[in-house]
Length: 141
Image: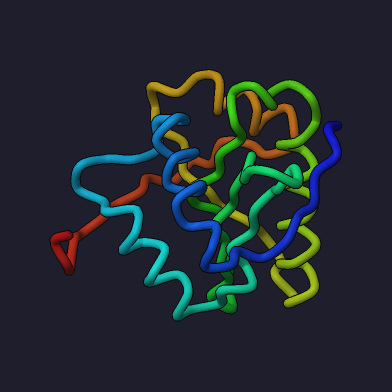
């Protein structure tokens, strides 16, 4: 794995994080990434993890715990860093943080068109569930 530090997001990371999310194809027109960051910083900001190589943010995991289940969103690893173990390290870091809170299980969503992401999550020990994800927008960004 490349020499990286896993730490909680800091305000100075915002531009690098949004750029990474764009490179990784996570940004969608209906989700303003800067508003998502702002919202996350109000709720469990310590669970917004970045991987930093000393110069750039090269990975992210926006996680949370609601007392029943943990969740991972905005999981990204820079394409040049993929396949080097950074994603696995990021998953381990998030699992440790959520585990320390007593979280018994972690959920995440993968777009049905993202076979590479599904393969990654299987490779790190996650299994597809048999539940459907339903959503309803309360705020339009």
